Length: 496
Image (cartoon, rainbow, N blue to C red):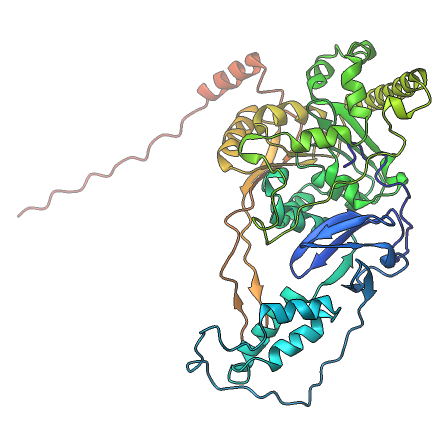
């Protein structure tokens, strides 16, 4: 995938146009399985053990449903109205049905022969129903369950969705939760709300969630305002950000700044020479769109290593497809000469340093409208350092997969002061099945989606640090007149 969000797609998206264009980022959906890809002509896409081309989806609207045909083509599937007047023949219960494997007359060889003839999956499902000896004895609910199971197996129906924060967060959490620090989609929604993310804000974000939090903030701000992303390592990871397919106008207000230069910026020792003193190799790696992201995404991260696994081990969700690199970036042997390659690399390095200087100038103003932290690092030192860049009466939100680091951060903030309305929260989510006469909570649910520490910044009380004022106040309090205690009344002794 692309390592930088400066070139998220070869062609910018068309605002207000709900049609699919070549170069757009889309999300493929089959049942509950999602996968993010880029639309390119004559490029083979593998999804749920099937391959096909996305040429035929160009020009159609988002939300259209297609059926995979022989040869890897996609054919638009029209919705058929189910007859409501027809009464289904169904049994009263399933107690007399014995699963002995002999109820289906069609064998696997027969089904394979039907597929080789090019018969559609819908017709195969219909033949399976007709050749089942126990289908009519099943209850109506059991029949619907049987049809749904067979359609999932034999019908290759794919829906094209437009990427959004909700869709991408659900996709990442279902298939690769380690890449987003196990942040559930409802937790991400809480972060955006508590952080007051809106158009025109000046936000600071420090995240190691593959750019999902950054993309969610950019989507909500709508291209208005500015975002300063602090990143560890050689460069920012924006794999998920590229999948949003933002236009170039959204990227004009996006800045990045290395995390290891924050201390020098706070101490006032930061200078442009510090950026020029960095090794050229690391800067060139950061600018090579795509190479950095593949390196960091494929690097094992202890238990958070989310290397691509076979689909058989993870049938519930498909992993994301690698987005092509920037077409302008080529190896030195593919370019005109080594001299041109060096000049191009120097130009990229100069643009990167200019972006860093712009980000440093914005941070030096120390008037950010909010702070979002969602990283795999300990939140306490990050938050205590970055709060100095936030203006008073502004929100901040910190995410962590575990509550113990946030409890320590909560204690340090109480001791430090300068914050109010501190709250440590966890959202609880349970999905429900909503069907006629059988709506109930689903048996499987998420064990946890992470914890959030939120609050607001205020001006630090300087009276705390003034020891002379403290002593005078304590002396004044000692000279206060104490209220005399109430006198006790003597009870007259009663003679016995």
